[in-house]
Image 1 (cartoon, one colour):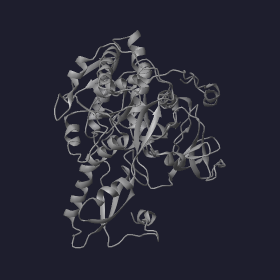
Image 2: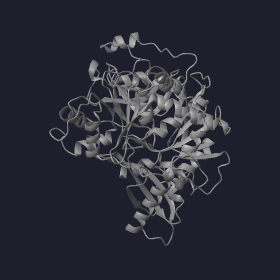
Image 3: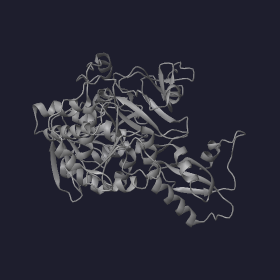
Image 4: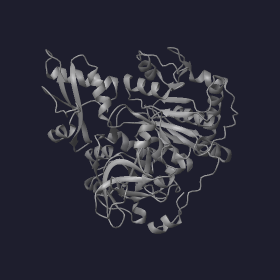
Length: 538
């Protein structure tokens, strides 16, 4: 945790990592609190019809123990992958805790993923278990190729389609369970992240990923925990932003987290939730903040009592920063990181670390620099690539079953992010852009390769290229350039058909919002698409 100091330089000088030789995320965020304050709320569920139900640390200890015992009885153990395909709610956390206690690896999957996206991740991870609901079972039932390592389906809505029922499984498991001993470097969690070429990669993290996140959460949330803190994020807990920027760190601090499953972000509903629950700390992606801003000034319509708002995933922008001060009465603190190495830069208005146009300064405990291609550190004001020096507890262990991609992520001891930036003489970093083709849309990092592969599965498509097009609301939107097969019409109905094709197979945030038909695409002599030409056109 950060020392309670108000001077940034003193914070950096005083901070030391203190991660024990034996450390387990579930023991830290659940059992530790359940032993001393079992009735303390961990999650506050808000249902679709606005019923509010606190769920205690004691409840989570008992039910994660039951699930761990039941999974162990079915052969699940250390190193096995447990996929979790659920919206925000108690079942998500219970499944994570059970996996950690078993020494297994939790694989969170976003509920908005389509069939192809799920099939790839389940096959690549070799998931042994999937915990999901009826909607998830319906998607899994459409996967046509075999998943030989998948041995158990669990449905929170009862036995169906070959899945065992969640309640039945918990009922048979004992409420007593001794978590396996894990070290900080033992694998705990794997989140798939999109790249510029090929398929998504599984970023494997050790149990140390949680303590590694703590100073990066405390800085933008201004020394959480404080009396009265109550946390919430609209981000899916399957993403690093929802899981590691808010859920697990807040529970470490004993701060309850509001859980509300939604299919789309609605500004007025978000304002009502913040007001009615008395939410004090929010992690809100910049696109959602822009949507809140577009819904009008909340003053006079809602009584908000926010203490901190953090944003990450894309640049916030000076206008949204100014709106936050006017409409929310606080300075929105920005942060920066990647799934592979998250929350390494941050701002914190409470200690005077805030500068419009900047994504912050290095969080205490992390060595962040702008480097040249040879790994040397850039001078102040010189553009280069944002990089983080290893070892670092928040840094990923490896890309799952992909040593070549893991090695390519480093230049010496610097983990390169693929993002270009400039650092000024005071240490503030300004984000310039990506040196690759990853698209940032509504806070999501989207790799074009997966979308292109999906489009090529459509019988009318001969060639496809995907780029990001600048957008004032979402930062970028996905734009696809398509070469159709002979005899196929480039009509508005074909645009809709292709959009729906991608939306159904990948996810709602990855489908191309714009499609342009071309007779040919710009290619290199080796047959690679020259995306910079298409980006310039977009």
